[in-house]
Length: 98
Image 1: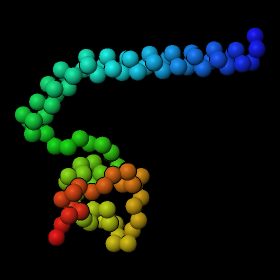
Image 2: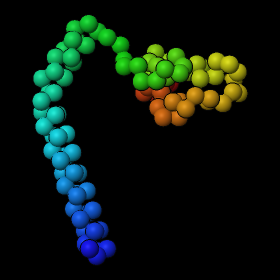
Image 3: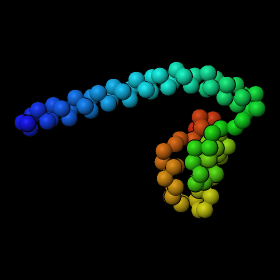
Image 4: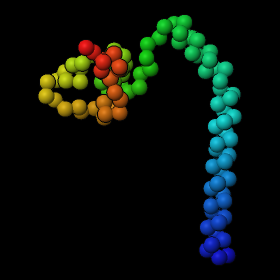
């Protein structure tokens, strides 16, 4: 078998599996919609706080509970030493303070 035929076979197999993955994602999203709505109603009814995205520091666990100084709690000139601090921004209410 020629190299070009092998490459075409490899490429077509990859495209086929990519199509299967996209179809699975579409069907799964439709199937989980009811469960997601139930969970959303439960969160609203229980008035739960924000989702805990990171476990490193308290100001990255619950971004809505952070204040201006928690990132510098060790020293006023200390650098951010948790990687999650570079992935998130502070809440808008903290950024837009007068």
